Length: 283
View (cartoon, rainbow, N blue to C red):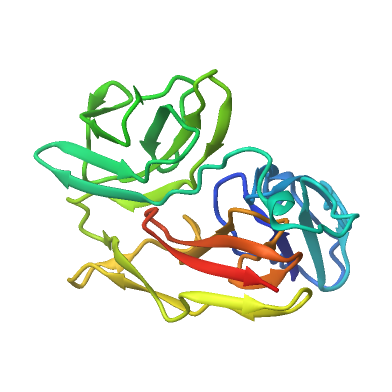
């Protein structure tokens, strides 16, 4: 069995869980990796990270002789080489867009809202069904922090399907500031799946010394009913972002690591984009 991992971001499909590859055959067979078994990666870095590299690159027709783990690691956008002497230098050079997304489905519409973010004056909303690619053209362009979606891909919304969306934010000069996590949610008429109702935090603030780490304790409260949560192939149960990785980073398990003195916020997201904030102080 081969285990394929991603660190500091997610696979192209938006998921973060390990990919397990198992091939079967007789002892005399030569078992090789197929191209379809290699997950696409490199375009979904976490906040403060960029495209990285494999420790060992899995390739088509690679012969499998024993258990092995491959890891793709997104790298930090800037390597911290100097110690910062004051908090102001530890603030992001540009604004970022980490807001959670609130969603309500009713009367054939999807109502969306998100936090107002300093430095953002325009929002582009992208939405489609799970398993489909996002279109290059946004479904909606707005200047406020809310919008109503009446159609998906120019057609009446099918609320029996599972849906995904994300939002891009732009400044007054039309420069991209950032984009939200991709939210995955079940249509209200789904007979199989239900959505998160609330992110609950046991950890609301963290204070650390430089170089130390602590884990965020969080859980998800689901809608009532016997339907199931969307599976992990959509997205992890909880996802995390730091709004200033120069101060503290957070991995996909919710472990916060102190980098330099200062303050930042770690956002904790459910699959459907609902979020809570954890205040982080590094001494």
